[in-house]
Length: 323
Ligand SMILES: [Zn+2]
Image (cartoon, rainbow, N blue to C red; front, side):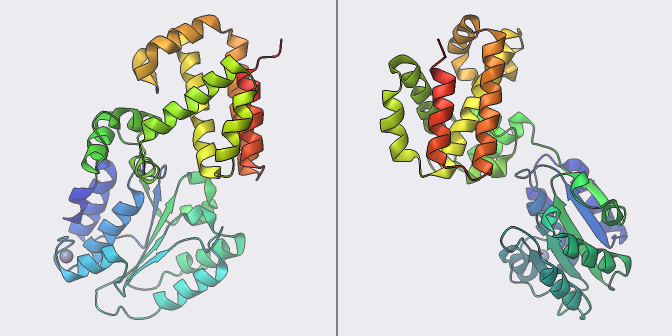
């Protein structure tokens, strides 16, 4: 079955393949879990299983078109800009009342369903209350509380979890990440392989090293590298976000080392010696303050503060300790 490609989500896959085999398919499902762990992949595999004459062989024309997003009975709905809008739900409603083009059913996958506007959610609730025949709705969302309970109570809940480290490493290597880099990437992404892959066009470890060496440089030389280095990269919001996240994880590791935590819990486990040294030289207050500063930087970036300014202020606070 098409589910064979899904890794380490056996609870979800068992539930869905049982529904297919028994013919007892619900009108609506809510796939709940962090992004990057295979929710959308599973939704597409489920759509293949629902539409393909061989229950998702993964080989036939039906399966291929579901995968390519060109099957007329399988619709993927994603936010239009920031949100899923009411117009998109009205279009779903219209299509859902048509007879399937080819298959036995119509499948609608709403990715980032938690980003429905309130009017869209109300319209969607109406669809759920009177589900069109032969229609399966799949909502993909991160948090169970992100949608009104009236919607979720009408969906069968399917839970997704982050991948265990070993599965994440294996999967990253299969997708072309170098074996030496995969464990770090798996740890930093906390088992969200899809996110790790989306973010690793070039060497992830290299970017991590750049972030930490910039922090070290500012600590050693004062403000001068701040001004030269941040000018070049300060326009790239994604890069600055990655740097801030690196710092956040670095101080999180320091806290872990200082508390005597197991070294298997470390994200930057390849730098254990340096972490131990820095942790010994830092006070609890310093580490906690640094974590708070990273969080403030993250919020500033989400709130549209200039990436360059955010990076400069954060580096200055982290590295240039007030005398
Ligand atoms: Zn097939």
